[in-house]
Length: 78
Image (cartoon, rainbow, N blue to C red):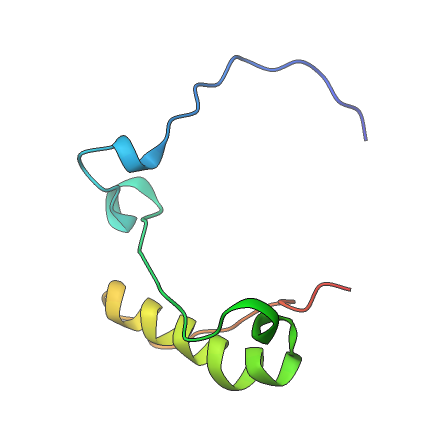
């Protein structure tokens, strides 16, 4: 792998954006989510699998139109 200089990129604070990007036009969107898990509960694999991932799936289904399947790929960092 080789790193090289690229064009300058402007980074914006998305909280200041008046119009939320839409998945169909921008390829991504933002959504707010308050998990029922906090603190050390987020470090427990069983909690992640039984509570957090289903919360994330519900968020995707409620935010995006036409979601047929949701797959979480390699969520467990080693």
